Image (cartoon, rainbow, N blue to C red; front, side, top):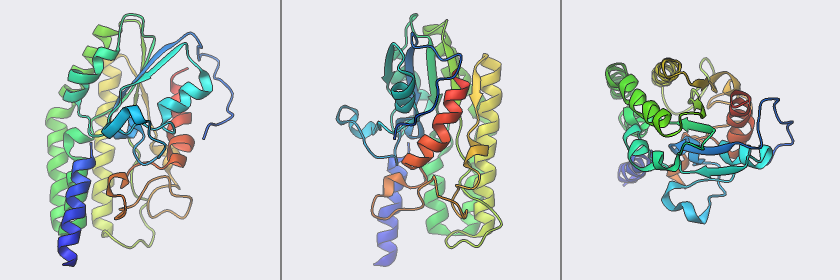
Length: 267
């Protein structure tokens, strides 16, 4: 019975993935910007709560970093089409239409679902260390072989539709602080998961640079706020009551981690 419950919760996790701050406006931030936010659940704000009714299953939060930028900087226009579960292909097919020649600022977080973030975490939770390490390794192999090309397709689409826009590619936080006592996954599994996330971020950073875009790296700012850290956690651990928010930033992770990094990069 207990294993059956774990299986149900894990399948739900696999299906899912996919506070205004009084901070001064950076010198380059422009209230005349036409801003469009693209991407997956880390951009839509899954895990931060305060989801807008219009966003439905995309779960766009007013506490997500794009919405916080809109609240604080107040660009001339703002639209988020970020959606939980989005991949590079779905961004190309369903989100890029929000861009136009008048768009002057674009943010995007995408790529994790292309290499199977959620299915990896399901495997690691249910099947143990050996299978976890193998699942991450398979995702790393896929990332090395395919991710740069998939990202390039999205980035080319952005540039084609919004030729004059500043584009900020926002990465993912590393989930675990290592070297601490932590219940749950083994230390080997946690280290391998971190390795996989770092690889995705590094490939994304290189692809962004090749496109002439700015990469906003959130890894450093999350240090001390990761799972297994001693500070305030900015990421949800596995949550059986609300499985979809597992391994996503909290509202504090969006406001204290994602938002300031994006705000700086968008200047």
